[in-house]
Amino acid sequence: MNSRMVSDIKITERKSYPKKKRVMYHELQELPKNYDVIALSKMTKVRATQLMMIRRKLRSDIKILIIKNKVAQRAFEKVKDVPGLESLSKELEGQCGLLFTQISPFKLSLIFDQNKVFLPAKGGDIA
Image (tube, rainbow, N blue to C red; front, side):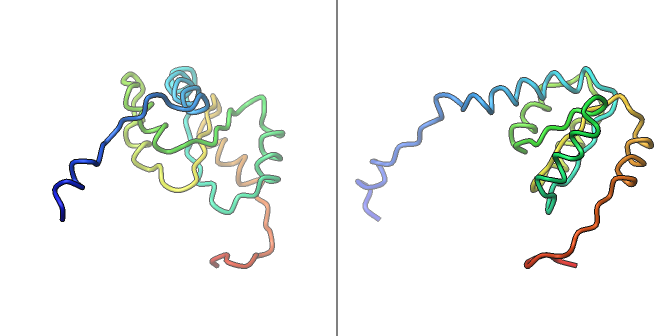
């Protein structure tokens, strides 16, 4: 390899982040302090219509955020006074949604069990 080519490579750092990510970052630092229960939901194979229906039904009780995993991990690193966020951030893989609520986890689980929607399989789905 030519040493002259290697010397031309420059590593630059990002000067600023997109506004949407900055807003998400600050929101994810504040929300855990305001809610007692934080739930993680894997959003794989969840259709937009299903998500809209859930949001409409539970709008007053649950705040649902579809997040960028790295943004959430970095935001949770800064929040020290909420226990369990570190273990939650390790679970962030794939398409994830965070649910912030004051409802007990047992009632939350019951609500989602009652609102299950069974759909026919589509091409590419794994049984």
